[in-house]
Image 1 (cartoon, one colour):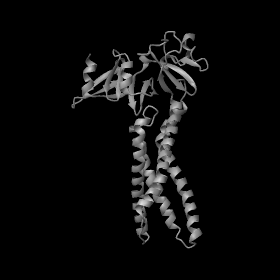
Image 2 (cartoon, rainbow, N blue to C red):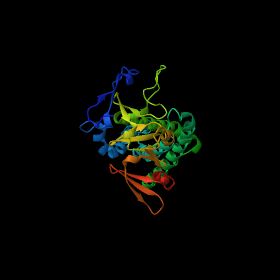
Image 3 (cartoon, rainbow, N blue to C red):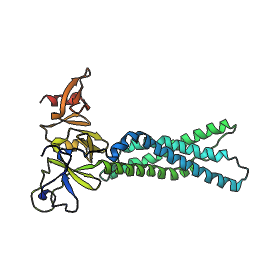
Length: 317
């Protein structure tokens, strides 16, 4: 491996023969190019953009659906109070907006990916039922409060029939939330770069990289491919159904679990220190013992990593 450089260095021809159509280069030391990437410029705004997207989306749907509801009721009863259909739509959209973070958190714990689809899809089918029940309960509660404020009473009507009617709409809302989140994550992964293990060659030639314990990981980013040396990884952190490989200030998500990637790394260099963390021992600057028996690791880049009591012995070997 050459010295770190910001200029990509072409890898030997033998390592790129299997993918002639894709430009594969070795990102020496995985140093980022000069200038901030689009993703880095977006990160400071992310905490505002993500909830803001859902708020704006719900506001637009509320405005459109309210206008449609007013037109519908006015066709049958010209003197029907306008505030009632507005309350119907407002209560429904407020309830859905409040449930969106719960749906996203549930999907993180029970991800819907191709390997987990058969196992986790039934859980999300049950999730649509829970989503509908919570939506209806919150919606009806808000309507009762609003009607009481206006000096009237609200009656949801025949609960079994109307609950089924609401479910026919709510399961689609649930699915749209998941699809939107999946599309958004896919966009972020494309900007960030997703790592994967190098594949074995199709022919009978020996693999360029070790398959059981790879020396490099392939990173796909914005239509290009780069090789990141395994020894350049500073730490690994589990995040949902991904493990983030942290290299020189960049995170490259690898679609795997911590238990699956641990045996693929050199045990003399990489040590599991927490259920969700592995560190490169060469990057550990300090070990701070805690009163609880756990510890806190300070890495050379300033990152603080938790170390569980059950894993502390690995740091002494």
